Image 1 (cartoon, helix red, strand yellow):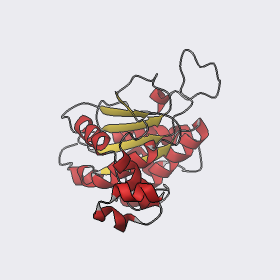
Image 2 (cartoon, rainbow, N blue to C red; image 1 turned 180 degrees about the vertical axis):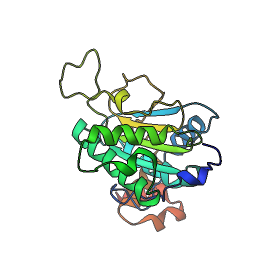
Image 3 (cartoon, rainbow, N blue to C red; image 1 turned 30 degrees about the vertical axis):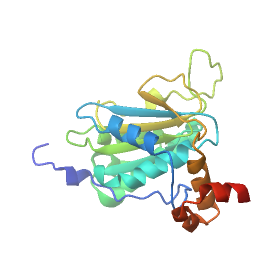
Length: 222
């Protein structure tokens, strides 16, 4: 692997298939905690964002990815609501890699419409290559994890879908706090009235009123 540089693993940043909001506000403490956790040197760095459905875990992850995209050579988004969705996400990741690196290891010789297990293994191998350490994998909606207490045969074991090499960064969003493979951050309801108003105004495209700082007056109008 002599001569390999970080640029050899660069993938253009895109979250085109992920629905988000144009301007994310609030949750600065959580964003800072994610960044601190994923900024460590050496080894795998994993953050688990857990909390009730609809609390804002996905939007928080989108905001982090957009804010810190220049820290990573590649950012990949995977839907892990079930195993079939996750397999299709890996196929999409494989196509992303091949668009910019047509001769990328085992991926270049695979049929993307063929055996997805082989595609998944090839993507994991590419992520495990020496010097390919600056990627971020986001596993979104991991709400049916394989646990000792979960007898659902459709439950997903995320460990089968993580790269083998102990490198790179991972964010997992889920409802359950029971998965313990990284630094867990609980996402709760906003406690701060100002933050809640900022989100409401932003979603209603009235964010220009935020700069006025008249939060009490605005609250009385709602």
